[in-house]
Length: 296
Image (cartoon, rainbow, N blue to C red; front, side, top):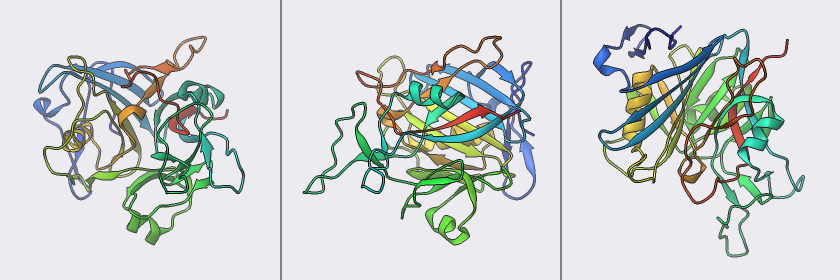
């Protein structure tokens, strides 16, 4: 199993096919430093000055961990059979209620359309929203698979999968947790996006070739001189260097957030943002992709 360890950060890049090769030292993500690790859950971060100021945060989870498991958390549905699927909540509040030890933002979402079809983007606490991609929480589907949106899910064997919309529909897999994203940036260890493009705050999820390791990555952006964001190609390159074979670009921009509570503490501290979300205030969210302790 590919893990970051305290003495050195051992990173693998999966090659096409069953074999994998060790990443050479110069290929490892620059500046990535281990912050803590516990029973297969690891948090690392990096501060970069080139090619521009960047702040990067990485969570790695061994999906065979005896202590931790991935989970999707969705806020309350405000209108039952009505058009809304969730309400916007403070991300820390969502995470605390579900007793998560770590989390990132997940599927894209939108305000309910008005008579002209326009969706409000006046994000506020309690606002009813639609989740615009797949959302499954503890085997309960809160939003269906949406045409054009690729997906990440945890299957019935506890393995992580990243697939296109077409492959998801064809497989019609039984799932325990699932989210959707804007685009597959890695598939079969190959980068699927072109170089260049807009620099943005980014959130991504990726898995190794066996679906036994999951990575959650957040890159801050839109903050000149502090962290200016990545293109999709740069994000895919980072995920590839971490060891991802398949990777998905999740919702980003002002929604990008990583929440962490160090699980090693005798008294677990409150979960809080370890990154610096862009915008004047922290955006409320309808759902999170996170990590929780397994029931004992």
